[in-house]
Length: 110
Length: 64
Length: 111
Image 1 (tube, each protein chain N blue to C red):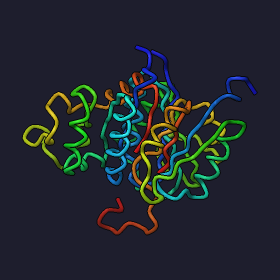
Image 2 (cartoon, one colour):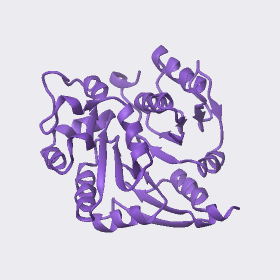
Image 3 (cartoon, chains in turn red, blue, yellow):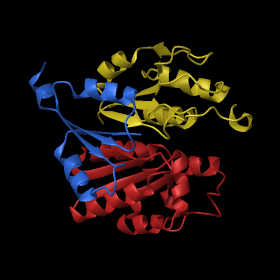
């Protein structure tokens, strides 16, 4: 699959940038772009932010995921505590980041 | 220098004020390229402008 | 699928996840390059050493800009300027995780 020039990949590794994630996502939607968003490392704590639901509402199921291993490493329960706004299929591995890199013509780390 | 390199447009996004090391790397990455920057740490960022800049560039580097 | 050159830049002592993430992309057939930018790192675990060895085995490389690199694993030293030149060829540069900390970590989390 070649990268879609109108698709923005957002790779979130810091727990400090939720307002930027949501702000960029809203702007991307306004601009008629699609996006894929992947949360890993300490950023999985952002799934507990009320704004995470807003983000989930902007993304199709296949375009938003978090790293299940990071979620477990940070002390959360991947079976009993799937973040609000996500389904079990969105608890993924680092291979999802590979998909972001392959499918998105533009890419932003936050 | 190849024609392709001459044409590269690179955007540097700063999530916090860049350190001297980041400035050094940005200088090297921007050499002979069409470089621009966007400060996320400076007040209320205009995300519409940022998204427009991302899609107008070949590559974006978002520094810490 | 085109193999991309990916630089994972680490400047915080909490380096582990960036290395794991880089290995994940090596497995995805990309060229993965974790870069240790500073020298205040806790000792490397066997798990982390194995991850770095796998990255090298899969045509990646682990770089260190620090004068005093972590012991017990193969890393390629380079200067900040050399790193910049190498990254001109990058497909993506990924400044990973948190910024460098000002203060030394307390004993509770220093190892």
